Length: 192
Image (cartoon, rainbow, N blue to C red; front, top):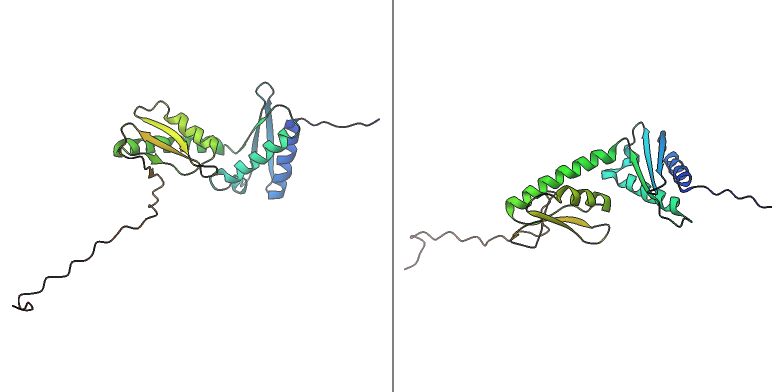
């Protein structure tokens, strides 16, 4: 007789995330809640100095979430959605994105030109779209291919289809210099 142990998606997700966090060398605890009806697993990581776990703009946290989702869904018929947060980073980032969306919508309306935001993951683009769905005079759409997909904020009556960059980045072209006019020769230097 063979006995096999079948772990749940939540158990696999927690075990994988905790094992990976040990590799980070960051002492932390993982609190897991699950919603069986919606097939959601939410993991909250807490501890000291979780900057390495969060990474630049949450990139490391997004990667951890992606890998944990793959592990949780291995061998499952239904897809489970895994959300991982570290010390409330996701809610702070969401507030920051909503503020950015409103600021860039004002810029698009002021200059009557589309504004392209920096590339971001799908869950962050969704925050931008949601924040601006009820703003009068602008619409949003996503353009590009992953991982460089970005949101463009389009004002009604835009005069151009070329979006302005939002991050204060300069365009990749150089401005042409006009040829310098030579100084007119003085009357003494002119030949008659």
